[in-house]
Image 1 (cartoon, rainbow, N blue to C red):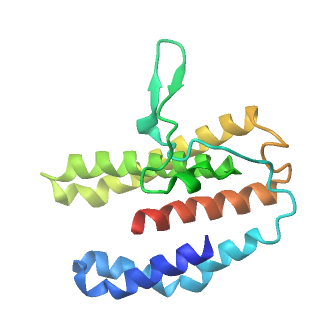
Image 2: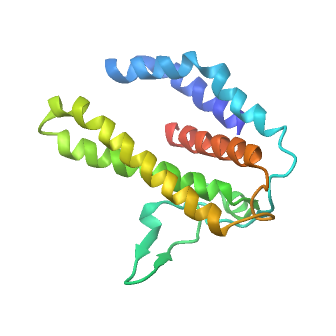
Length: 179
């Protein structure tokens, strides 16, 4: 994950000149926090019990979930199409899929915000806190539900390890999106 993050940050730095002014300002903030971002991956090294490694969905997000009358159905277990078959078959932490869903709530919140403000751009600053609130609420509800039914040995038994791994996987997912 750290190597992937380094590669993503280097790419972002090389492409700064191609970004819009607003995007460039955000990219510069991200780049200025490089050391702190990379430290999150170093923190994972201190985790003693990360839970079991298993074959995971690999591309778990809201678009892979259907609501039926009284349940949910998860679709498309082929994994991330951009990854090799060997990468998709490799056993990983279930937290990688959890991170994919957490990032998906962010996409959903901001896709709705962008769609709504495309014709009313002045409303964006007023509505962004609501998109952020929804994203955090949905993520929190998902995490509470997930942890209520998934326990050790699938997941780490220690809260510190859970948070360190989740933080690293969510950040890794964000770096994957940057590429």
